Image (cartoon, rainbow, N blue to C red; front, side, top):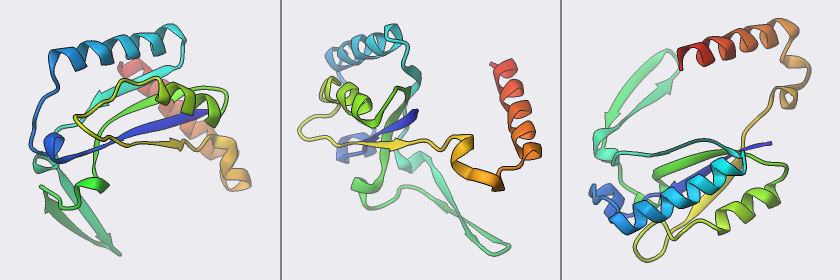
Length: 141
């Protein structure tokens, strides 16, 4: 089971305040533990929403909205992608994370869809296409 672990943004992350050396070191140790356990697939911090954009879809129309975005609590400051046996294991890993922000922080855990979750609608042809794309992505790394 794969889980996306999402660090919610706060006023500091949205202002572009960088973490301290101590926090970077603590996060490095935590990420190293995830790697040693064989569960970490990816992990990155994200730039503030002021450097981002959104594309709104309305039928065939596309509207670009440039950041910054309001509602800081709804924004993401970083993520991990982990592969574990259960949601409970994902929760246990997240509980071991050093406090990622000054003051309070919130980390959301969301399970990633797997091919079998889509049922019969994910035809053998679509599965083959997905496998070919996965091979191409691996070759691009």
